[in-house]
Length: 373
Ligand code: PLP
Image (cartoon, rainbow, N blue to C red):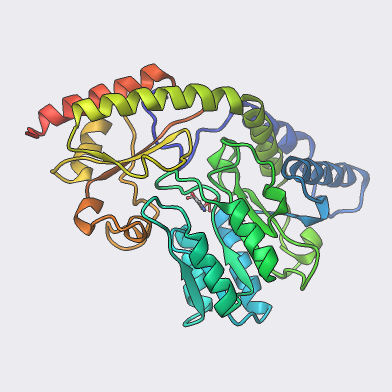
């Protein structure tokens, strides 16, 4: 795994998650909604995990809804805003497409895009003006950006929203497991996704406020207090919670060693590829992420050659919409031509400084191979 630098896309399953999944599948496979004793034990487990998730975020268990991941959670929030009849909503210009697309679809002509500065962070003055002028019912700002790793001023944005009577939604898919979750539970809506921190794919959570109109997302059975019908994925929830607990235990050490490794990489990168640029270099960023530009030829050529050398990286626009163009980079004012030159590197909790330096050396070798002068 030492050459895997695509953790922001997904992570390998944490061994603790695998164990929890197997144990729960074998011992608590009954439907938590059934009424006999064994099903009651499954129900109890489910509620224990809900308590634990709420404890980690600092909110109430009744506010936690389990669902399939961040895409579903973000769609549910925007659909809720539409169902609530809010005239306008505002979302940051660097949100993940699973916030931007439903927002555009459900609020045509009634969506305010909050710009970011050249450092990729939300312009809080612009947010203030939008709150005063357009009075959106909901504002969405992610905690950490998946492409650049740039940390957003979500605490300040949340406070501004509170002051102006707007609800605040935070997509924390890239923050949870990597940084301290303290304060996230104060957001009205909050999204998390297990596979971004070593849990299985297809499981996540949404925190919803207790006040106001109740969320009705998937309709059918009475699961999740009628907020999200469908038999609960208890093994997935167990595995997510096990991965989350493991990450909380290793988070601080991983952040320190991760930052040291990345810093060493960036120093080396500037030597071996002086034409390259680190995007958001001066902004606060996730300790595991580097988004950078490489000289011509196009990024895909670099990616395939790195892949042949055992390094898995991304072109940074894997999750963006148009062919090659990234909403995030456009919002930051990065020239269109440079967008075909970006590579995203995202390390994991046990990536070492040696792994980072090996990647820098591979970049130098690929540079030779591609005859970049
Ligand atoms: N939000 C962010 C910030 C992400 O990085 C991702 C992952 O691609 C998602 C949402 C979507 O998450 P999921 O794969 O759980 O649907």
